[in-house]
Length: 242
Image (cartoon, rainbow, N blue to C red; front, side, top):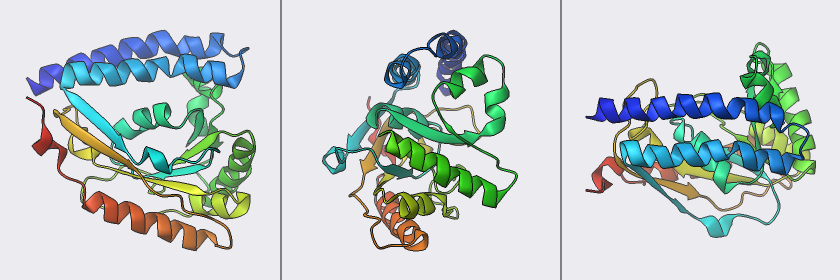
């Protein structure tokens, strides 16, 4: 039954992607906020469809920690779930992606309309420079900048290396950082078809100020908070709704 439910979810995700990708191109003449609203209706649908098909629910804690001004968001990366949920919490936002994705016909053009920070992953030095330069520009435009400091998805209970790009951007721009912890990897594991029913908890942490700190200090504070919080979150499979 889990396989059938998961297949239904992916079917809906593929169909909705085929419908919404061209919308990003068509909506290009609109201002960014309008484009963002239209494109994230895809996100709204997919989170709803995930709940219907796979019985995956989620709650957000720590909303009182969100500042009035857009800043840098550094989030634990366990699955694709957080890439969806964050889009509806920090509005409007931009994210970091491989430059090559923008070359995909229709789909890539739609991505380009969302003003992502497109980096060259073939060169670490160049990619960090792009994160800082383009990130400062997006923050100046009052756009939230979403960063997954581990760079890739890690399984629950594991920890990747926290890369310095987010800390460098914070130190250079003077923008503060919001850390995010969650336990989505238990229900939406990486590299698998199956989506397990349960209740994800996503926690918005207290603001980490960047003033008078270097990139290493900021990154370490983010890592310490995220990892300690993740370790104290419950296994969401044990909280499954009937």
